[in-house]
Image (cartoon, rainbow, N blue to C red; front, side):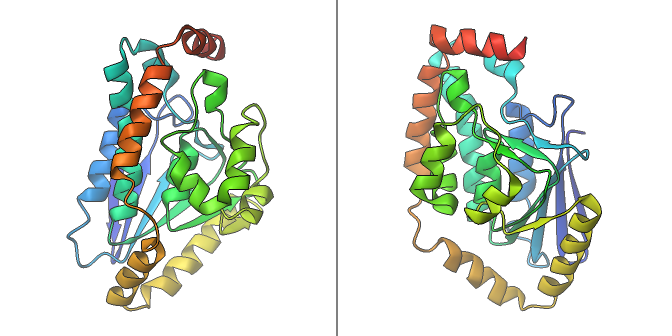
Length: 248
């Protein structure tokens, strides 16, 4: 299964993966979202861990094969709205979402990371906001990234789509909360954090989650509109040519 849900006490772990460097197809996006939503009413859960398979790449962003198969603007908008729905599900979850980033994160993966409440990464977890290379832009993931990194950081990432930026850069600009030397240290840090958070009041943690997002607009209509923009751009000749070149 490309997406699994495991429970251990008051902690739920959602793990996703795909053969193409954990790239996200519409099906995988839906599965992750459904797993998240399935936990909304579970009063026994305090923390949700969101992680991917493997030890090198956290997520390569949108699945290129599916992007190339999009045949009209409506289908394109629907694909990008799956990213929007996942971001909204993370935001609206009553539980704290801890994202574990073991390797490189590209494109749409940054939206998932930015929507999470706390992020622990390795020094190998470089980031790249690559959408402009594909003839589109980070419209759907933009609000979440801008919220964490600020407009200046988001602007810089958007306009340097070919460049990977270091994990220390992501830490300095607020996308990551902790950076460890390697995966061994990452796992130790995650275990320490879970042990600490598990001892806190469940009700307090839920109220804190609400507080974190209290000053942020709802995004529902904004992300729907942004998905439409991406759906139009993905059908342009420039975008199709860029995607074919990237896939080859």
